[in-house]
Image 1 (tube, rainbow, N blue to C red):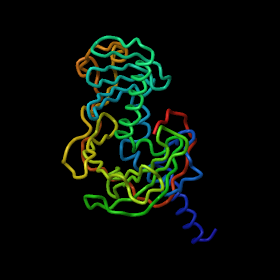
Image 2 (image 1 turned 90 degrees about the vertical axis):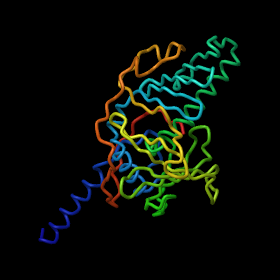
Image 3 (image 1 turned 180 degrees about the vertical axis):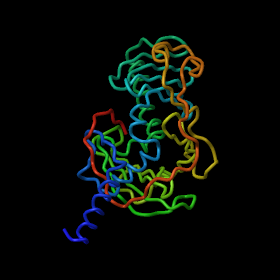
Length: 291
């Protein structure tokens, strides 16, 4: 091999290493064949900017409030608690089984109980997506396409990835554009399309207020202008919660009875590599996927 050949070979090895350095396993059913390499690479870089796949996989208990609903989710088992006014639902979002109480009294009527469980499951799907969309870029049924470089509502340069869905969730006809900030590699904005073939989005919203919660980053703001309001409240990651949270409808103070994950990093802007090479796809793992 001549000198030029050695230089080329070394360059290819270095490039290949960079390509796969931040790749994480896609969920079983992710449309890798229909997605393009640049979009997949951006998904990998975004995951890394939020703490990395291993940190996300290890994260177990999440809590947040959206509108008038308070959520507590055991990501590892599917156990879930939703409080909405005088309604408390304790269920497993994987099996669909659960119980519900209104004004402290158990809901025993089969039809009313089914309605409460359906309402809670829908809230988990919708509100969970509003909180965790950047962690679900390579979920089952998702196809990713690179749209190109665009400017966010607040004037930052971003790489835009389009998400469409195949036979997954309750609204597979939707589409999203995720604006991935060039500097931080965090999602900075999203555009929502009620129908994937719509030319204009039904709404656009910012993703700001990124903060460390234990080993992962979460964003609490979804308005059109930074600082306008906080749509996501009570954000928290816990490493331990008692079973009573998911078994007893009585009011709970998570900080009194649980162990909140300590922030492992400071809340400073995160800059990640911006390589333009495609990421290496790793073996898929099975995990629940609801859009």
